[in-house]
Image: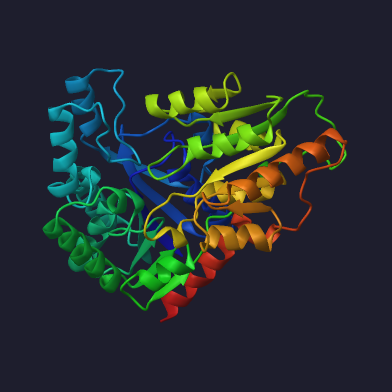
Length: 425
C-alpha cells in the first residue's frame, strides 16, 4: 500500500509533535507500506532533535517544501531572545500593546493557525508528486490543523482517498478554550473542522473523547503509544545512590497547567527540603519562578530541551514523575505523547489535574500512579510523603504492570488494520 503523509512537523523537528508518526513509520515499512512524507523545509519548529532523523527508515522518501516563518517576524519585532508563543496564546501581564495586538490577530484573523501559509507550497509539491506517483491514500496530520485543508483540496482536485489524523482537538483545543477568540472566529473554526471531518474518508483520533466530539461518524481511535525498544528501565531493586528524592517533569509547559500548585504540595510533603523538583525541557515564566522560589526555595531545577532518547532516560531515572493535566473545558480527551512514555518507564506518576479524563483512566488501569485535583491538597501531600518514606526504607517504587498493549508497535498494527479496511470499503 502506498501512502503520502503530509505533516508540518517532522525531524529534525523534535518534541511531542513528531513522535506519533516517527514511531509508526518503521512498523509501516516493515509491513510492506511504501511511505512518502511531505514536510517543511526550515519550518517554525519549537525545538530541534537531529538524532530523530537517523531513526527514519531509509525506505521512507522525504519531500520538503518551503514554509514562511512567522517566528522570524516575531523575533525581528521583539528580539531574538523573545519567546514565540507555542501552546499558549495568552498575552501575559507584562505584554505590550503590539504583542497583545499580534496575539489578538493570531486568535481572530489567522484561522485556523499561523502554519496555514505553508499550504500553498505543500499543495503544489503534493500535486507534482501525485502526478508522477499515484498513491492509495493521502494522510494529513494535525496540529497544525491547517494541514488538513491541504488534504481537503487534494481530495477535490484528485479524488484521492484522504485520511485526517487528529493529534489534538481543533475548535476545542485548550489554548483556544483558555483564550477564546471572538464569536465569529470560533464559528469559522467549527465550520472548517466540520468540513474536514465530514469530507475525510477516515478520521484517526487519539482519544475516545475526541472521537465523540468530532462531527463525523467515520472515526477510529488509535493512541500515540511508546517505543518499547527505546526503554532501558532500572530493575525493581536497583539503587540509585541519590540522597535526595527526585521528582521530574519532562516536556513542554503549556497554558492551564498548575506547576506552582504542584510544587506547593510537594514542598509540604518534604518539609526538610530533601528533594529536587526537576523540569526537563519546559520553560518557566517569571511568575511561575517567583512562586517556585517561595514554595520550594533551592529545590527547583530546570534543564533545557534534551534529545528524545535522553528524555526517556530522564523519565526512568528518578523516584517520581510529575504529570500536569491542563485545566480547561474539554480536558477529558487530553492524552499527551509523554503520558504513554511515563507509564512505560515504570516510574510512579504524581498527576495534578481535574478528575474524569482519559489520562486518569489509563493511569489507574495500569497502576501507574495517583491523580489529584487542586482541592485535594491534604491527600496529595499524604501520597507524596508515603512515597518518600517507602524510598527511604529502601522499597522499590517501580511499577511492574504489563503495558505492552500501549506500545507504538501495537498502535501501529491498529493503524494498518484501519488503513486496509478503509481501502476495501
